[in-house]
Length: 343
View 1 (cartoon, rainbow, N blue to C red):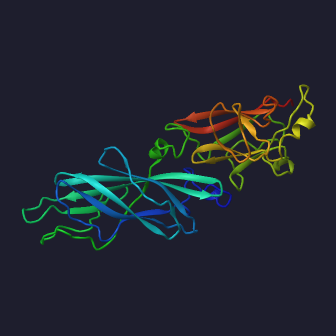
View 2 (tube, rainbow, N blue to C red):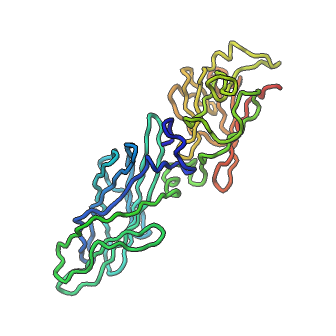
View 3 (tube, helix red, strand yellow):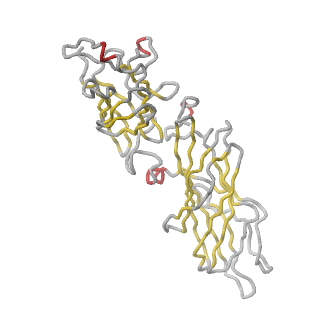
């Protein structure tokens, strides 16, 4: 996931297909016959094919017929270890006529590492084909999955010539899972809101800093996918930090006493689930828009936010953020140091 161990594997949409590799199938033994006016309960399984032993966490499951409202399904479990599959059951209601009946599933998943979490949503489409039956046999329900991009049906079984009261499938049917970015934002899993998000390759621009006190403009390129902000010298200056923040007096002289109140690694910045995240690492905490946050707190940042490292003197030194948004994507984030350092 978006963490120190594999930050470079993530694509621009925040997905690592090595860690996040779920699959869905209709299990063998599923009933393929139902009467018109009844319901079909589909035994299914969700599995984890991660090749690096990364667990997934299924945080939500919804289903709906055609374009109807989503209804939440009760799972009763969450963790899905690599190589493991766990059962779910989805009921298709409103089987009131012969013909094609669409059933859509929405699955919310998360990949976690330490305090980090990337959230995702996937959809899957099933088509239930209900055939007219004679008086001595009920309609046959053929369960199939839509192949991604083609809409082809994959049938479990066909119509039987015998009375199909308890006919069952004899093989499992894989159902493609398709990434659902709009649903991710609608559910609040990713993005700033339903219309705006921060891509992983967003450009960071630094204004008002002294020479070497901030990295070059561009996306985050550190190995752990994070920027360390604090009193420490930056990597460009031979230190271990990424953004250096010190306190200067009105005439431009260094205020050593106030600067020592800023920790060497006061807070961290990183992109997670299409959001710009701040994590407080200083024991003294900090303020965002005047609100105080203690060590370990995580804050999602937005356009216009002001970060003040010194809780007791927030106006002494601060960072103000400006987002440049194109078609919903925050392509550039400007960090303006307040006050600017005189050069």
